[in-house]
Image (cartoon, rainbow, N blue to C red):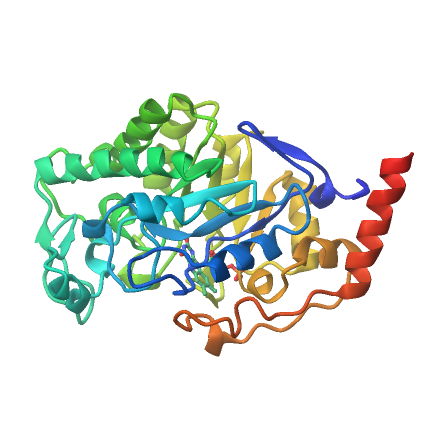
Length: 369
Ligand SMILES: Cc1cc2nc3c(=O)[nH]c(=O)nc-3n(C[C@H](O)[C@H](O)[C@H](O)COP(=O)(O)O)c2cc1C
């Protein structure tokens, strides 16, 4: 790809060399088996999305263990079969590590004899009161994250991204709207951030490198009863600590306030992530949420950020090429986002064939130069 715009310029994150800065955002698709193993269809889906060489793919969120899961047909990274399920995947590929906490489906947990848990007893609206993780249980979760990270590398992933966003377990500890603990994991900002930082510590130790480790945060997210009155002090501290402790982290991934979950919203007054970008400085930063081509090009130009695409990328297997060529995009169909074990709306979105042949021809021309 030519290099006049930053979005299409190469960048190295951790130990991964990328050819451009368009990233596949993590997306749950429910296309895994009932044993939480990816299928050949999942492998095809990711290889389509990684069809432009040097594209960073982030996997759908993947439960670190059965007890940290919460729904059928999501992947887990616990058993040998679940680990082996990824061995044909395309690269570079990051595994997103997930623990549900109070956002699990209580019926699923009950069916599988699993405890429905959270950072504290504050229930999700309409859900039962969760069991409050004891200090010992919390520390066990930290170890489960580390073990899953090791499993991810064994599965062939190039690194891991801790799911610290969108109201899942790590976020449940971070934010005072669902953490009313009075022990070392609650109360002060330092205490609420302890779980996330211990997870990163445990993963870095287990892998022996920071360069394969990342974390996703969503300071402004309102989904699943989140959003502190003023998220900035908590996230300012957390990001400063991450930057101080792990100067060589692969990247920081942050969602923009103009989205909630997989929907657009209008960002509220004063909601912005530049305070995080300032702390993070020139290190690799992935920004996600509500990007179209113009906004992605402008943001990459202004900040040097990598730009993660969700909805447009699930509908456009060759998105980096289409963005580069300013080629029209396929429209996504929300009805097929979460169809269990089904290729419809998954691997059947068409490539722009004229672009594909052009890219291949230009590769051939470069090779013969
Ligand atoms: C079908 C679907 C599933 C998603 N699953 C996840 C997920 O597993 N983990 C996560 O952090 N975000 C998830 N998201 C959020 C996306 O990563 C992204 O932040 C969001 O779609 C906004 O980006 P967009 O405007 O480019 O779509 C999901 C989004 C969609 C559309």
